[in-house]
Image 1: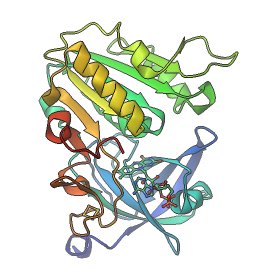
Image 2: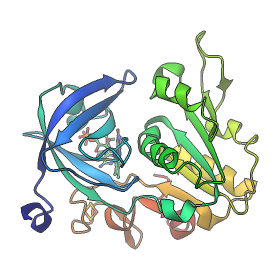
Image 3: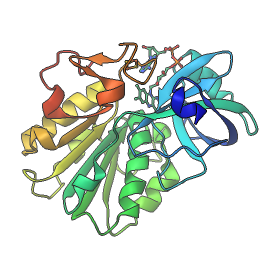
Image 4: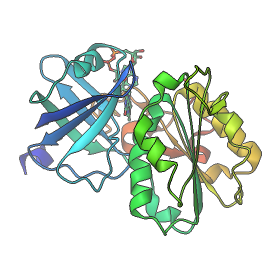
Length: 274
Ligand SMILES: Cc1cc2nc3c(=O)[nH]c(=O)nc-3n(C[C@H](O)[C@H](O)[C@H](O)COP(=O)(O)OP(=O)(O)OC[C@H]3O[C@@H](n4cnc5c(N)ncnc54)[C@H](O)[C@@H]3O)c2cc1C
Ligand code: FES
């Protein structure tokens, strides 16, 4: 009850395992002292005691009840410390916050998920939610891109995903090395063979701002409706509960009204691709 009354109070969690995904991304598995339920696409604030806190979208399936995972790119003060975590360390977790993906509305639809770089993290959670609901979707496509094969997160998992009959998956890298047998080019170069009814289809895009911008343009060009394109917006955040104003996005607070928005809701805002 105390936590419900005080959304600023983190729940203590124990680090169970740390997986190095790429030279800059690690996945932290942890167990909160009180279970935290979340909807895919929502985010949590992770606290490193004595250092600070930062927002992350769980990369684990929402069906994983007792434990949670976040996949974190090392970019600064808090994320540097997260990369130093090891089994048994204590962290704090606040949340979940925000709205998540409206997965119930995706029933019976054809879905195209487009991810880039660290944007794979929330999408991994979404993909597991879709796998749990296998049979409810008409068709499911995943198109993912990263700079080089070394920067491809969830390497072994995506190999398993590629074997699934309920998923059409293709990955690409901007620059190949001798290990890479797949497509070379940015993620928009692997969207043309997605065969679906674009006018009725759902597009989900998550990744660095430049990738989201060009992927969204491509989806619109293909015929997707502005109302059917979902973007996950990573604005700078602090409180996570619509109080501090750090995450303002036009008339919205990304922490409360997002982080998932329909393109139609935010397309007129000048700062969406910043
Ligand atoms: C809803 C949401 C979900 C996110 N999910 C993930 C995730 O799953 N995995 C992941 O690796 N990252 C995620 N991020 C980005 C992550 O929060 C930032 O990388 C992190 O806050 C940087 O903290 P730092 O102290 O290490 O960096 P700092 O030392 O504060 O800054 C380093 C760089 O990161 C940028 N930055 C700082 N704070 C934020 C912020 N709150 N949001 C975005 N950029 C910021 C700064 O502009 C600067 O360029 C998410 C951000 C949001 C808002
Ligand atoms: S993070 Fe404080 S208002 Fe959104």
